[in-house]
Image (cartoon, rainbow, N blue to C red; front, top):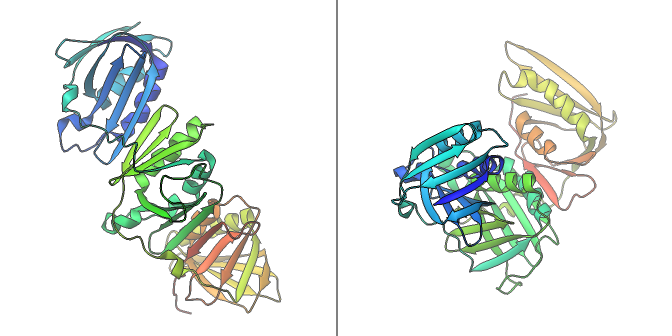
Amino acid sequence: MKLVCSQLELNTALQLVNRAVATRPTHPVLANVLLTADAGTGRFSLTGYDLNLGIQTSISASVEDSGAITLPARIFGEIVSRFQSDSPITLLSDSDGEQVEITSLSGSYQMRGMNADDFPDLPLVQSGTTFKVHPNSLLNSLKRTLFASSSDDAKQLLTGVHFTFTDHSIEAAATDGHRLAVLSSSDAVLNETEQNQSDSFSVTLPSRSLREVERLISSWKPSEPISLFCDKGQVVFLVEDQVITSRTLEGSYPNYSQLIPDQFSRSIEIERLNFISSLERVAVLADQHNNVVKLSTAPDQGQLRISVDAQDLGSGSESIPANLKGDSIQIAFNVRYVLDGLKSMDDKIVKLNFNAPTTPAVFSPESDEGSFMYLVMPVQVRS
């Protein structure tokens, strides 16, 4: 293998694929990045794969000899990142495909790698169920739901986001057992699947993989639709010349729709940023104790009272204007859960719907209440 490429492009590509390199590899080659040069296409491909998450990208290069090799991802990445950004980089591997000479304007380095044949094949399925998804719709789905997924590996199915594709829409949902975020996006699927669209298709994907998809879409801002291929426990995302492959989470995702109350007896409409500011100030004390804040209403006053009582530390309260409907209520929440949901929204006004201090509350944008909802279980506290 012999090629010349840009330091800036190579460094950017390495930072991307290294996110899929195993930190605690079960096999030495999984700590490496796969490098493949193709003289026919003039492309230099880089792949990281830890058997759960795979990322592949390619850059343009002047390829004299095709070939492939794997190199230790961390060391190779650090060497390349320290070269001058305007320096062309030459990569030359030996005939055995186990050693590479890396040359830049500042000098040359030799690195020993492993044979490319030892690197596991990336499951680039391009069959099964296929979708083309609007990138902004997918990005919005991830921003509104990923934060609500569980970080507890014991609840493996809840460590992902559950997607349901129906007709031309996507519904994304995530829950950790204490809260639930659901976003429905119409006109998000730009083509019909090969299956009958009258039947919905569902898949649950790990949050770790989806965060890489979110990062990729945010940084590249693709203009073309994103292609999804779902088959045999794997999902592949194609974003321009970037590929992310992920295993699916197997099992029956909880029937979250049954958790959402059909109707509410109390509601609050409030300015979102004002609400966030008050909660963040009150959270200074709440974070030191149990993260619990109380929300209290008195309909005749037109204000929402936010209070905290941190034992042995102090207490505090704030009142902010609100449009209140229904009887007065006092309800308590984990302040971090409430803030997470409010910060995932963009609207100026948000609506809080309640029934009782012990039943779920639902937060939603006032302008588009039907597409996004964030359910939070209240905390039971002593009076």
